[in-house]
Length: 345
Image (cartoon, rainbow, N blue to C red):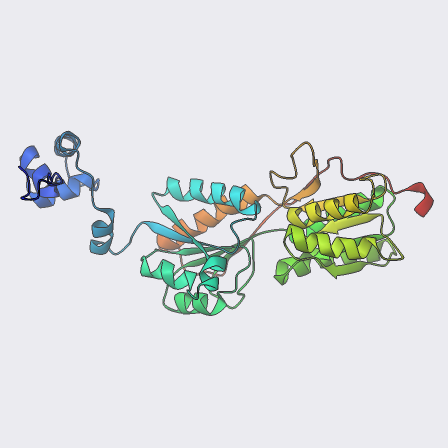
């Protein structure tokens, strides 16, 4: 059949009523069977699924979510999709959520703020069952509103905002910074600088660096280094052009460390002959053979997995938030660290 203008109408999509009629059951029973309700016999369930497959029926997820108290989705709030640290954490989180039958919905808070929207409010409008905040964010006020409305919140790799009734999954940042600093001390470095990052995570890494040097009877130099390659480059360049040039730089993360490597190259410094460099997060970038960056492995995949577990426990009625889970840190030593130059002492 054609419309008067000659166009062929789109074929009608099969409905749950069509499935029920094909299987010879009621509409409500067909719906229960497709949802895997334990009250439906295996024979009925198989009959309904066979009818659905034969007709090419696919359930309307949105309509089903609106008819149920939960959507089966979890909002994942990211602050900067360009940071490779997110990749492995998301892999762990997705694996954990998938095992519980939950699907992640990603939202980029950085992009949303640029166009005047709230990423948290967008996630809430999609009726997500919980929100996982990955890394630092500026959406504190919106997150407080969501938490006060009863939405479960999990902070992954961050402590902020700290006044939420949220579960927290983080790396042991103080221990990670200590291991990096001790590695440089063992290599004979006495003049080293830490490029500090934001938030409590940045403070913990800086404190670990300072405490380890204080225990060794050495002064500690900490300067703002930001979280990206450009900010890391600018900070490292200023440090390396100073009169008391350090022999080692420990950066807040791998991106800032890569910016440091670029600054050293532009100034004609050899790595690790003239300068040793350590990053943090041990992202896939650190393992690239051309970079071979020594970096603190903060168990990013495990952080993602545990964050997913906290979500599923909260949704299963596992009480209020407030739990803190720390993942151990290890140092991955590669080619960007070596003995301090002999002439510097």
